[in-house]
Length: 536
Ligand code: 3UK
Image (cartoon, rainbow, N blue to C red; front, side, top):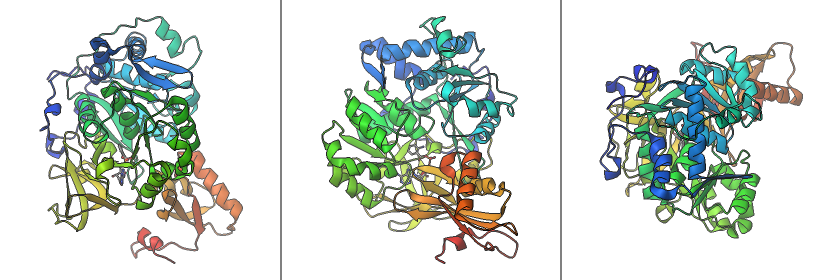
């Protein structure tokens, strides 16, 4: 393999081979050549093979064929190289709601052999700064509508050059520059193991972890779950809510439709009502969203029965039995549950409609192996709760992070989930093994919310936990000890909530706040979060 990376940052910061997981490439579809560029496979190949006129991406007012997307990605690649000075291996931040230009930019970055660092639209300057510093991001392509927080971050980011804005009419914006460049571009001849994305995950400490994935990994996830579980058709129209910056969305709403020559609908607004409207407008057939969203959408099951919707995928958080039956009764569609992780890139345990068992996530996706292990790593017999361990063609490679040896042990990836395998080999989710709060599909680290609250002048002490919630799986709950002389009130609850929303991504704010005179602590002063979880 010959790396195309003249900027060797990613390879220099990979975990040592001894700390990486074992990789499995047994499936025939996982025999990758030494040189591989995922944009060439997913985008240029269909055009080359005569499928360029097929519909690829839709959005309100937009219909792009594969050839349209290719021409745009090529022009962007030319702007990246000839105007922005991007060289293979550079990290390029991408920031946009789900829209066609975000997809074109993603492919542009792949084509030049650079590394995409996609950021969730809701992230604020603080989180953006952490990612830019960690990944030593040098360039950015940003939707003009989301430029403010990036500009704020830039003042703390010496490595970052001026962001290039798109979806703007500016004379020096990306679209204006694209018109001055050729729609033809010769892709970087990347090695299959050149890093092409660094996907950040929030983790438990609030210090985000960057997960590194290769061109080969992108193609591997396309070769495992879609053909074996989803089995999409070329005339399918994909739609859904997860951001393209979240690997659930990247796979479900961009990579997977493109592996079969299908099309995708990219929506900037993805509330349940927006999804329902768009499913009707675009005739969508395959839906990706989280359990919370299915619960709300189920109320309009009768309407959904009149649409072309035929397959629905749930991931991001545990799917309660009640939600599965609610959706089936409302729409007649059996949900496809799947557990994925940013570290693994996409889904590794899942079940199709015919094999779905209420209460179980499913069985290992072909290409992957899973088992439940004890704390010392030894496999546990069926029926016992332990740690979920998985391995397959993809796996965890943290960017320069000591937590690598926590996630990967003995060649297996430990996802941080407690699971049970039944006698028939179906895996049943139990809980997170750490302090991660998973609310409405978002992972929220207790510590990060605590850090934000502690910045408020009236807060003396606080502790944040996840509490069970019928709608969101869990919600963030904060226990707050006020400074002497301040009074608890409903107005103060709102003030603290607003304060957190302005400090970190708004979805992390505590939906419940309880005032206490003291927090439970050990004699050595360590906070005992587990005691807050006990009923009062
Ligand atoms: C939890 C689930 C039970 C679980 C993701 C699909 O969620 C994704 O990635 P993240 O890194 O979080 C990973 C953690 O989320 N989880 C996800 N799906 C399920 N728990 N049932 C599920 N079906 O704790 C896991 O360790 O944000 C999901 C595809 C790509 C992804 N990145």
